[in-house]
Image (cartoon, rainbow, N blue to C red; front, side, top):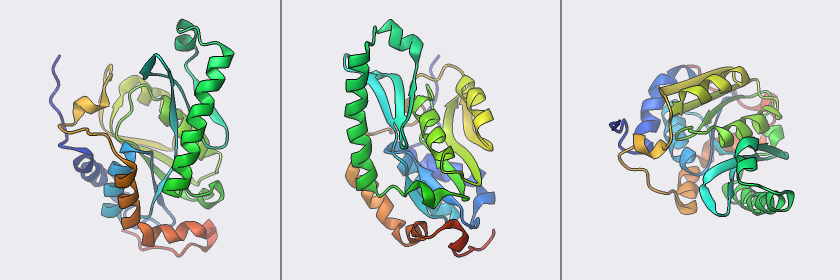
Length: 233
C-alpha cells in the first residue's frame, strides 16, 4: 500500500511534535534529548518551540558488515547493549564477529559523545527527560538509549517521535512514563517513507543545531537541584 508522507522534512515534524508537547513548555529542569543524527534535527525544533535546553545522547546501531541496513542490535553509553538474538542466529553471528562489530560502533559512539558534547549521566539525574528521535521502526536503538538514560535516574522519562511501529510502541510503553507519537503504524519498515525529504544528517548540521541552543545547555553543568527554575507555561 502506498502511503502519503506526513511531513515535509524533520524540521516540519519537529514543529508538529512540539504542538503535542505544549505542556512541556518552560518545564522546570526539563531537558530535550535528541538521538543523533536525525533525531537531533527534530529535537532542536522541539527544544526551540518549548523553550527548553537541548542535549545529544549517542546511540549506535549494530549491523552485519554484509547487511549494513539490517539492525542486529544497538549500544548506548554505560555499557548498554541489546541484540536481536533471532536475527543474530540467522546470520550465524559468532562471538568474534560480534565483538568486532561492537568495537567499531563503540569507537563511533565515543567520537559522537565528544564531538556533540553529550552530558555526563550525573547531569541528567532527577531531571525530566524528553527523548526525541525522527522515527522508530525496529526500536533497537531507542531501546538501548532509553535503558542507558534510565540508569541516570531521571525524574521522568518520556519518548516523543513523529512515527513509530505500533508493536514497538506497545513494547516500549512499560519502560516509559509516557510515549507521544504523531502516528503509530503497522509494519513500519522505513521511517523515511513518512517524510517528503529524509536526507542524511551531517556532523556539521548537528553541531550548528546544538550551537543555537548553547546558551540553554549551560544549565547541564549544574546539578539538578541547583538549576535555575524556569517559567511554567
